[in-house]
Length: 342
Image (cartoon, rainbow, N blue to C red):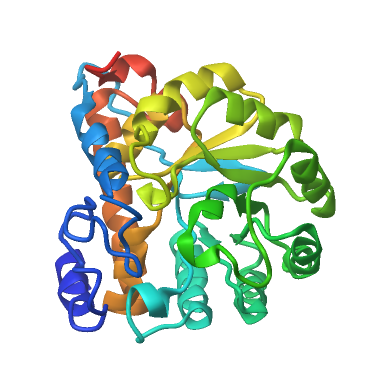
């Protein structure tokens, strides 16, 4: 299956909100929720995409013609590429009835593992969503990151039993999900977390690396570090939860400098090509997360669609590395990109 075939298939079953656009840039769905859009005008998702496009790469082919290695070591595991599928929940509500959360995660987790990467899985008000996600991760040998919503502590503790039993190589919490309108006034309750509350949650993980998703400031990154997080995701929840945010591309570099290697740093938000992945690594990220396009891949081709999408992004990354003088991820440096905002 080609990438184009996958897109065409997705348009036949992905529902009325998502358009399975050739490039997922936030424009066609900007204020649709339910759907892949956002609260308000939806300008943050658009800004996420646009700011990565403003950053350019510096070509340099006067370098040794060594093979290009795109592999990444992270939390004791080896991956083919430094990008992961992002967590998505309520897919039947937002993307169409072809999948529900359990069947979506089953396909995504296994297909990502087969392609040499891993999937962050979503969560929901129905406990079966987390049970299904962690079961899929267990069958994939722990190659997945269950992502827990910022529920009350009692609910989080209940979910951690399934998380730790899955053998997942890491666990995450998308604290920015506190801004999702369909989580407000729900049972179980969800919302913001203090540093002390987050520290307690980290303790529930029994030594499994804990990743805080939804960090957009240096202050937030240092709070996550104080709570004991092993990693953070620089993320504004794909622009879904708050208008008028800066893009992740605009805040990544200052957060990287403040953290100074003390935690692993992921970034998401509008990253849509292997060249974008390269730019994020040049700004200091350890790895990248891509969410919405993986939904299109699953709806458009199941496991085969996911495999085609992973190969597309991976080959684009390898080509950019080759043309910019990098033979490994460690070779990617800040001077390989041109950023007009800095």
